[in-house]
Length: 142
Image 1 (cartoon, rainbow, N blue to C red):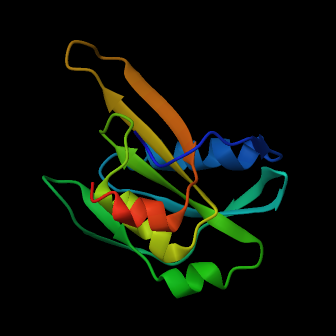
Image 2 (cartoon, rainbow, N blue to C red):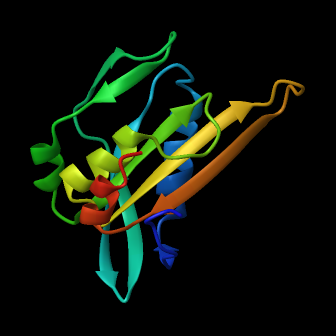
């Protein structure tokens, strides 16, 4: 059972989400990271996405993961979490995703996955939002 719970997300700036998806799809070998700008008032409102300084580091295969500085993310006014891409990966959370969410203090985080099924040439995509207690996330051990 996942430690994450269903949440109400209101996206007030759909252009920001569309721009993030385009940016991610144009970089199929690199993860892309953005900071979610918004507010929490009974529900979670996503108003914008900003792109902090980050660098690519070697990941598994020929995929480049991202390296960023959490203290810089937390200093961005209105930051409530992060969004990042999972190129060539079906939806799912990695141990690193859960650890960074807890470490960074994200209220919410999102993963935009895109992949091509082995028997298809069509690309599938998924944008999923998560939130949960950092104590529970860290203790899952997965």
